[in-house]
Length: 174
Image 1 (cartoon, rainbow, N blue to C red):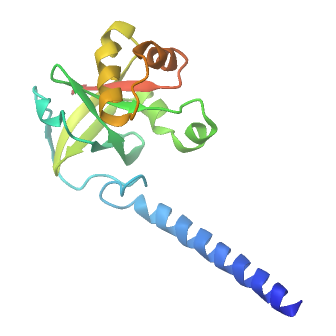
Image 2: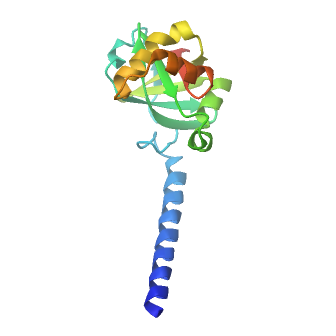
Image 3: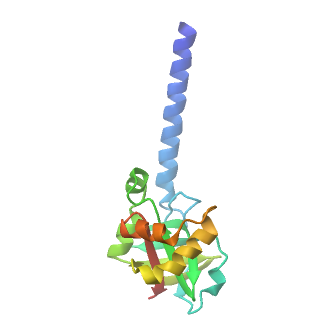
């Protein structure tokens, strides 16, 4: 019985230690130069330049990093490019995990001033949410092509946009 109690205390202490270390790490990332994987980070250290007019070089990129200016915070995101326009999605907005984890889309909708970092280059952009079904069809097709193992019908993806479960932001020059 003593061994079982000792083991339970050991696992409880280990779990608390891991939890505290994780919280300290996430807090410290607020002061880092950008995100680390899916962990949000702090402000970018590099100076920003004007956004290019041709985003075609992003066609085959898997992810980019972006930083909102208000409130300051940076993240890693998927990216889609179509007709030299660039877009960032945010899914699962109605899911519990989305409601807990994703505050940036609402912040970006209120104040879209942002920075976009690609391969160490930082560009000034404005994030503008779009719900226009006609404009979104090729963007959602690109999202499905790049990131989904099975390609759902575009109509189903448009339903996700209409239900506010999937938000799509265009990044336009500031």
